[in-house]
Image (cartoon, rainbow, N blue to C red; front, side, top):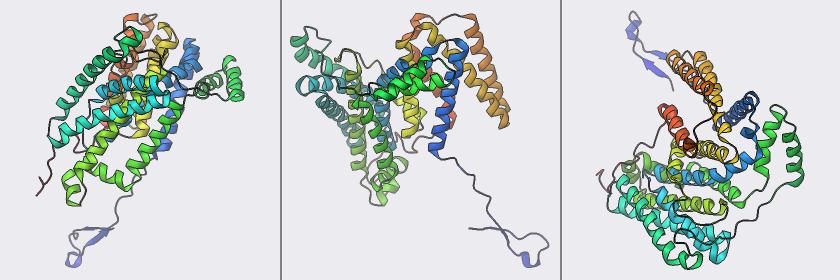
Length: 428
């Protein structure tokens, strides 16, 4: 297309002047951004590990804990994508995840780990269906309904645990242990990476430790979660059904005018959202040691899953990155001492320094100045302390969640009609 500009003064008859459109700005593909991000994160962690003398930052045990603790967050984040891409805010993911934990324990006691995943998904889907009935059919405010689902999930599971698990475990808050998934490793690859990790060579040992954590004692839950990430992407972004579902979250009135059954798509999306949160609860039960349902074991991971979804800009790849970040901060706390978590401050200083360089390159002087001030402040905290107070360690992922969301808030774009009330025929 060519833009037609008004005639210039002095041209015969004011002839129109044909101007070519400005060249389109090339956007880097998502996979390339993801790969660059991985390289940057590994580089920062490797440099921090070398400069602070904390090899646990990139050890295989830390990566294994990251996977175990990050999977429930990832699955809740995927559930949030399904719901909010259809225009339905779902802060009830925490309650649906709680239902999934109880269902996983009940199913695991009667049919093994796969039954645990199935029953967890079914109970989570039931919570999602209740949320859909309240919000889609009866027009209840999304936030109010989500809070109610959270309270309902906690109350129902507490009652059911007292009714069913207490006679078996003599404890109204815990279930008996359930069977875990059998894990598998690549022996020759794991052993070779272990030798490289033990060599403590800069970068090489760091990469070896991180990769070894991904190929050692691999659970089927990890493979299932990766499959669900890919499935979410292809269904929502590469299928006709996904296009219609996302159109409901952008402009439901226009979608209705084109013949899309908006109510049906919202019901499917919110129910699927609950099922994914329920699978996240099952991953939490099967990944714990011992594998039991325990009252309060979700520890607000449903809300952290929402934060991972927002950090990922409502897309599967970004949500995977956010879940990895939050899972890593929690896994590092479990696999090492307070001094290693303290080293994350140094990693923050390096990251802020790289941000300063990038913003100076882009001539964003104000942002560069703020990043430089943040780097100096964090380094001062790191230099004047030897370790973080132990009282703060359990809240490490929550603190990182707040910081990351504050920094990423300017680049976020939620679905246009997310959380807006919709009634069939309102556009007529």
